[in-house]
Amino acid sequence: MEPILQLESARLLMRQWRDEDLPDFAAMCADPQVMRYFPAPLSRLESASMIGRVRGHFAEHGFGLWALERKDTGQFIGFTGLGMVGFDAPFTPAIEIGWRLARQHWGLGYASEAAWTALRCGFDRLVVDEIVSFTADSNLPSQKVMQAIGMHHDPLDDFEHPKLDAGHPLRHHVLYRINREQWLQTLHG
Image 1 (cartoon, rainbow, N blue to C red):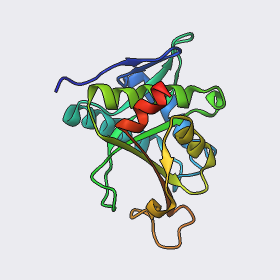
Image 2 (cartoon, helix red, strand yellow; image 1 turned 120 degrees about the vertical axis):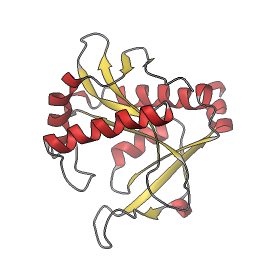
Image 3 (cartoon, one colour; image 1 turned 180 degrees about the vertical axis):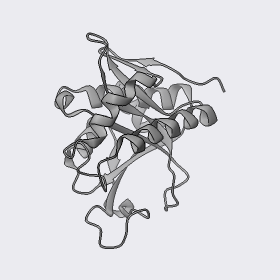
Image 4 (cartoon, one colour; image 1 turned 90 degrees about the horizontal axis):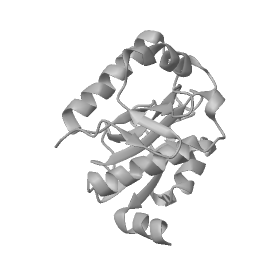
């Protein structure tokens, strides 16, 4: 499959990563507020390594986490995209949708706008049957984005994240799902 290197929404360009994204990306991933629902902020080296893994995912699967750029300013603001879930769980194998935005761009609807565009790509271009998203049960902002894009939560799907130790405060995760039929209903409903 030809890689999907770029998507667009009304206000955002979802594009491939550039080397010059690293300083802003590393600053975002070092921000304790941005990373409060993750085990720890990332160092610059860990951020660079993540960009490398994202590029590798695009090379292997033809899709991944697109860098987000505001059309009006050209500013890098974070990422949104689709990825293969990288651990075993009752719902895997699966494709997940995820996002992370720099704090100064919160509350402006960018996460939902970009996530909606990524869902459209998943269902229209990749022709997947279902897309999932998950987060720590305390991460209400991300759960609101999941709800805003039409995803559904069943508490019976919640799980303990296998990459976090027992007793870790972020280990309990909620799982949201949306399938092609639900997405079409959201489009036309």
